[in-house]
Amino acid sequence: MVEVTDEEFEELVDRGLDMIPRKLLNSLNNVAIVVEDRNEEDPTLLGLYHGVALTERSVEWPTYLPDKISIYRGALCDWCRSHDELVEQVAITVVHEIGHHFGIDDARLHELGWG
Image (cartoon, rainbow, N blue to C red; front, side):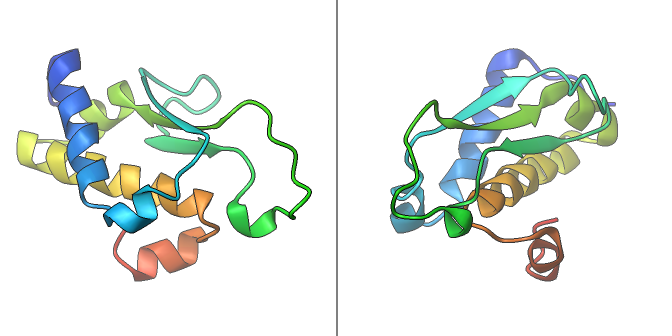
């Protein structure tokens, strides 16, 4: 288990976002990225994309509330054994969940090293 402050964890999430090419990040419209302690249904889950992937939307897709990407601080801190591992795993989780927004499935994300 690794302990970090809320501010340090938010910085790790920002560092994960910095790994995404700016052109792709600019396409991330109407998506809220939030840090939560744990997923209530699966407390070991590291992150979760809540929404409909861009590849599954049509031109007529209505715009409502933003999609949401949850990054689970408690689960990630429990999962990792060192600060360096936490840095790496937060980045992987951020990129992984953003990948889902763009319609990339788990198998492909694993192939690419993000999973």
